[in-house]
Structure formats: structure tokens, C-alpha cells
Image (cartoon, rainbow, N blue to C red; front, top):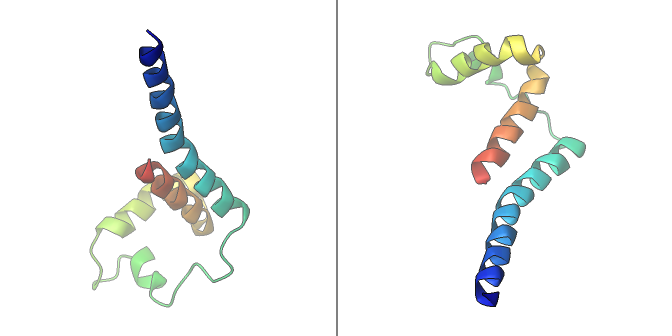
Length: 87
């Protein structure tokens, strides 16, 4: 019975680590944002459905616009999605 209990504790630690580490990463990135600018020279073509861009990312931005309001807040959503995908 002791080995079964140890196995459960190991699984609990692994599962908590899988979720805790990406969540910690997102928290650190939100608390200490990168010092470089988040909008690049080609950002305008993504935001405004430029003819040279696929429609996936601009569509994603249009879906987020009512939720986040300002485009600078989109990065927080992207970091959260990135952290969740790392889990």
C-alpha cells in the first residue's frame, strides 16, 4: 500500500508542476514585460487584414477586440494562451 501512496504523490507533483511552471512563466512575463516594442513595422498589415497576410491572425484579433478593447492588451491574452499550450 505504501508504494501506491508514493505513486499518487509523484503523480500529484508531476501534474502540479505541469500546470504551475507555465502559469508562473505567464505571471512573470505579465509582471515584467519585455523592454522592446510590441508593435513591429508589419503590424499594421496584420491588424487591417492586409492582402499579403493570411486571414487567420487578423480574424483572431477581431475576435479579441470586443474582449480586450486595446490592441496592447492582446499580448497578455497571447501570453496566457502560450502558457496554457505549454502545460
